Length: 186
Image 1 (tube, rainbow, N blue to C red):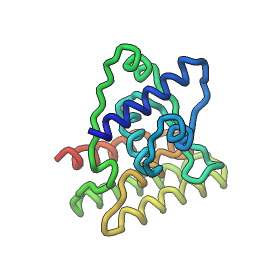
Image 2 (tube, one colour; image 1 turned 180 degrees about the vertical axis):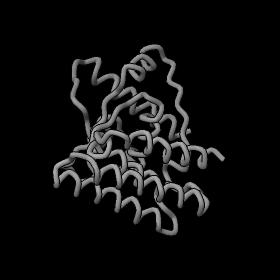
Image 3 (cartoon, rainbow, N blue to C red; image 1 turned 135 degrees about the horizontal axis):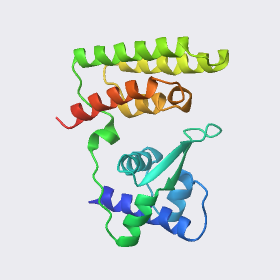
Image 4 (tube, helix red, strand yellow; image 1 turned 90 degrees about the vertical axis):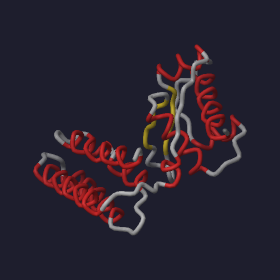
């Protein structure tokens, strides 16, 4: 399987970086250049999303870069490469973003987003932070209404540190993630 082999290549590269003392996060371009993967950025991003879901890599947003994400191997990923025991699963819905949710499930997610909005509006964020958080929520609400929502993109919006730092939002976001995971596995 090419995708699994590519994931292992990415993980081995990130392991080699850290083992050689380079503790910096790296970009998709750096991964592509040093692994020889000649695939679109979106493909590599989907592979790293699965690695992150498995707890083998960690990502950070790089707001100064277009589509910016930064990657680094976790301790679990490092140990998996060291022991030669890399167990990764992947799901085509991560690449396509196509998870079939019923209208009632979408309505429930919209309701949760409304609750998140209420929490953000009642929080003690600065005006700029509140405006940014509300804009992220509105973008997610708009994307959910599209005929074929791209759930990975919606979740990337909702994983923003601005929302994650508001008390009470994390558990609501986990509710959305649980619904999507259940739908993806059905």
